[in-house]
Length: 171
Image (cartoon, rainbow, N blue to C red):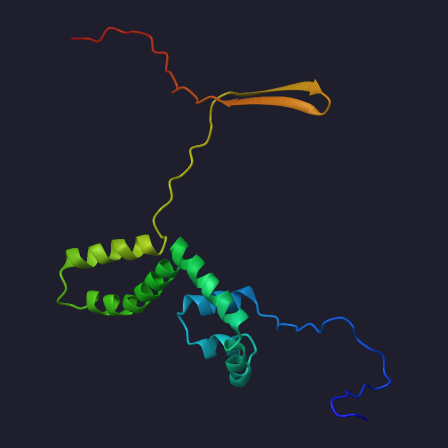
């Protein structure tokens, strides 16, 4: 064999370029990492990655680009701000409750905090829907070809009237 000659084995030649497969990373994992509310290793372990595997993955440019793109999207849409605000509110909630439940706190302050907590918890009473109590009608017109028009009315019921004979009251 001459110097510089390359030895080729007798096996079949592969002409296609070798592709590199990327590990499957869930959108949820990318979103959690982009939010940055938890340590990256906690997020990675929740998604079944070891510390070593995550550290290897974190060095990949395509992975860092995915996280950067999601982070940019979140910041543009205000998701990051709302998520951090919700986390901070939850963190302060216990402190506010403990201080508000003290005996030396003014009743009006307690009432204001209670109203805020009821609103934040979605516990406000809902407006009751009034039932349609009047006469109703429905009209359906078949236009042919599978097309139709439907009109309905739920007219409110007028208040009841009471017929009373006029009588003269004694003086």
